[in-house]
Image (cartoon, rainbow over all chains, first blue to last red; front, side):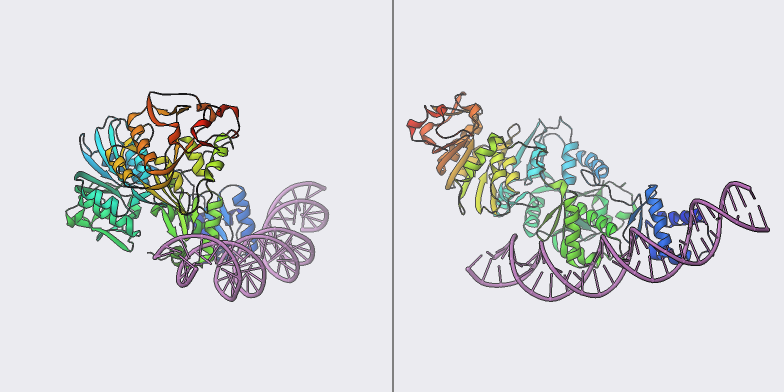
Length: 252
Length: 252
DNA sequence: GTTATAATTGCATTTTTTTGCAGGTTTATC
DNA sequence: GATAAACCTGCAAAAAAATGCAATTATAAC
């Protein structure tokens, strides 16, 4: 942490504060006071002025950059998910039998499917099923069972034995966590259903925004080489995928 | 699970929480506390604030992403359907097995069910199932099958044979048309499912706003004396019911 | 250059916010 | 119905903010 010249004009000091905030996305009143050799009161008054002028966001203990501030949107990472949807849609052809999971990424995918697509979809997700109902030319089969309230998917032996009776062309799953080892999740019953879905399909595609790459959870869904396609919003030659390529997975 | 800097501003921490929740669709208070190096109480207070601000949905043990959940329509009148719901709820007791259909009246009914109701619900309606998921103490079983896009219910042989395997205490159905002869409808496959549902239950209750009294359609669902309860928003001694009483039906 | 006025700054005091902890209560899950 | 986890409430300590006041400094007028 560096020192700053002895005397500084107010305007000059505030410019320094803005620089710090924008550089680090945040700044503590105490740190700024130490750096500028002024009292925290002075810093606070500066921060109040800057906040009033709308240049930063003042919070208890310091300030945040305005760009850092979380802005809620209807669906998180909407644009990324739209890109993903475009790529995934290219895997689905007329006449296919597709088994598809739940989650917001999958929902955006379904929304982005062409209206003239003729295909049969199997799903365990209430929300995905509802979304699929907006497509006039697809047949939707809901695989019923006991519903998990949080995730609104059906689970249990009934669902799994039903899945085992089906042989589909493509399995599309969202995921909470994926790394170079494979897919992990935190809900045991959901994991069992996902396993069955993967087994029931010739090929499997995982859709995920890149932020989830590299995270893990406690329960394993499958190994990386059980997956045929990995679809994120990134370009296929992106360096993030260096650990993934050896398993024969196709990055889209 | 990654590490986070020692000192974090409250707003910054809440932004981190939102990111986690939106990324994984859910987050546990304990995990967040460990990641952020603060007590679970602090996390809980953050979650309460964020929930109050409508940015996420707080549940026991953590929080859920808002994008996952059914958001009730902004303003809904305490209209006929709420009255119907109150009456119908009186038929349902703890521990019951209830088979329930779809439609807007049924949806309002489910919304008005007490939160502490412990019961098992079987349904073929996607929207009813979603609504039931908001009730913490009920078990929801979705009877899966081919989905009809307009009405968002599952139909077909699979569903019907599944229904035939169940014996429930009460069947609650909305209806498009009812008169002194009985219930009629216009969709053959939906009629077949409704017939099976009525047969699978000890008692049947029909919920309908009074507007629909006296209308008929082409396909018969059941006779009036197959029904045990008729529930509308009107008082039971209302003159509209004069044609209905001879069949032994109970007007609520 | 001097002086009056206004602005800025630091300090002490009071007030508010935040946070963790102890306890008793509620809730989930079996 | 039992049990463990999660929740809430009140409390106290710590941190930060606001406030009043005095000292200093800048600015402008003369």
